[in-house]
Length: 323
Ligand SMILES: [Zn+2]
Image (tube, rainbow, N blue to C red; front, top):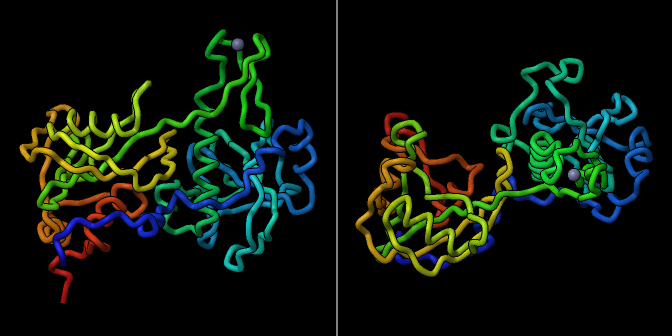
């Protein structure tokens, strides 16, 4: 394998499982005050369920029930309309309106408890459409769960705009779903080695690309430079954006970058990051294959960044299992 720095190819970075566009979100429809009344119970409208981050999954697909057969919750959320008929998707035709019912707890009348899966576990198993719907549903449900009251006056807010705005009945302010941007970065040195860190909170031997939240008043590039310096003592320049995906655990948007290191004398911060190492391609392939280290799964931007740098998929089968 060539050790030259690979120019980022956007297409090869475009297969992030949670970044797939799956619905026409129908932003213009949301403003109709009768939207949910018209859709709930109408022929063809389907309902997705979510309870504490888990949704019912049957035969490898999200369960999308006919809304006429479902008890209407107080505040359903309009997710959008399916974009294209998918023959593998249980006969949900193009243009089907999907509503979200957020439940307090798993409902065994809908599906047994063990049929309710969490997005992280389901992401790579689901079709693009279902993974996209699930990411959207998880993110908006998480926002409602934690933003019930007006941040200005403390009054309980009312859900409006198809579930995409909360309005304060006391002072009339509108409150919109928030997303927390976080950068994640493949740091590469002049010898084209990759920098990976191991966080204090992780099991021993787990390594990933460095990441952190963007602070108020900060650019994405500024966040890349600051986070890398804070966590590893490495100075980087020329951060280049590669791609993003929502990470609704509970509310992040992960923005993937690659950046070039100025120095190589890494120093972990000793608080958040306990170990930082440089890897050549062969060192990383061997360490992953032999199980000396573990890297994030295919659902993550980190894995996409690592394999983007590596130039292909990394093989995790352990040496003993090989013929
Ligand atoms: Zn208020």
